[in-house]
Image (cartoon, rainbow, N blue to C red; front, top):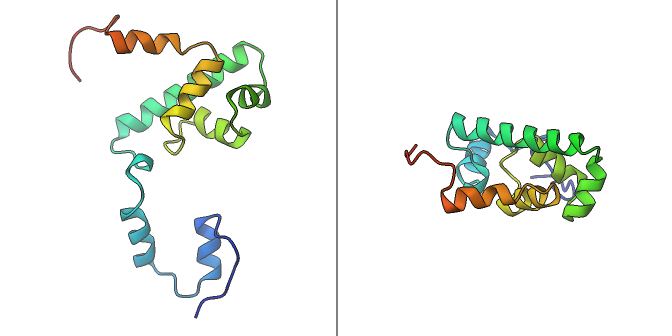
Length: 122
């Protein structure tokens, strides 16, 4: 029997409220997590962290607050914090919105056209 704890907004809340929650439940949650949330390699994780840090640096270099960028990108400050932290959970479109607000979206065009690449595959 489980207690009704209201909306489950976090994994830890569920652990505290559900007396039958077991490690097997946690493993099932991880195994069936959407693929876009999972990071498959340490390199991908590091690249996201670097991208987030560069976005934060670009924002602070311009003298803009997190609230200003979040408002212009039409996202919450919490989501902007996730982007600047290099979290995998924000959609790629969210990263693109922030790049656009910071005036950095044009740099992605170089990737799409192949300019500035060495021609080597990773």
